Image (cartoon, rainbow, N blue to C red):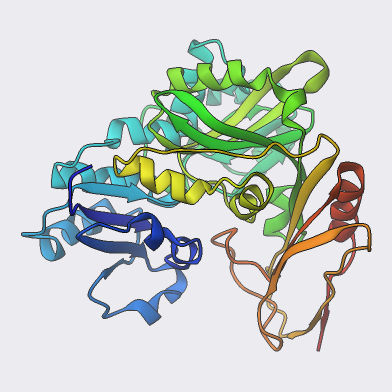
Length: 409
């Protein structure tokens, strides 16, 4: 790393990296500037700060290029770091415009365009859902199947269709399934893939030199799709000793996608008895929700810190604990409601039985309106992280997901 380097941080939510102490990871740098997306005017409080530049829409490449030309003219940056899913491709634009080393647009598209991603993985022998052409779906080839946007995140826009009649009701024509073209964060470009039955897991860690420097596995409870409609969502950590076979798959994935140094977040259906997995998506950034905080509490590994350090050319030294095979950490996030209710928060009821330890708990202030548009898993009504015997943690996470965890007035 250059002495007194200048670093440009790109994120769709400034509160996320600030909350997780990104500034600590950048100590010794000459200058740090943040470029953030103005999601629903949520970042107006940062307007006017010298080290913060606001882009109204990360999907507008012209605006991003304009930011480079107007605000960064004459500035010299040594590194550009993307902190979340929606900033992966914009960060690549900035690297190329500023002639900074790191992942460019072509490589970044691999992690944003789900069709390109699955094609590369499949060609390398990694199992993924089958991607169908529009003509195959229209000929009633296979149902059920999943229709999803190619470049959104957090299950936004994902639809399961169980019959050709269901598909026709979506009124999606062949123009929505043109796989050779790509517009980042488009809400009108889709792909169709086979439905995979099984238990969904997330694999998170740090990749250095195409090798997993650290990794761990969590089992999802409920779904991200349900979270969009007001259903709680979380996960329970798994015993790494039972998932040793994952290492082989990780190396395949990193090689197939030319994975850059930094954090990774993978979602996959894992068949533990067969030591096999089907990869749903691969992200070149830290996991969302309470994943990173939970990993830090369980293993002592700061994923955010390691991600930033590796992105700015510093050596990443990871030492981590390996908890008892019977101990687990679990977390749950309570979403805002997606309707027009005028109800406000009266109380949060996120408690755990005496046999479980509460490691972290947060909620919005009492009186907060319960409805808010979804745009990030970092924004929740409330969340909790608990620790204890694995079966008890999983049972409690499932219990919290099923019951009403708040009161309203």
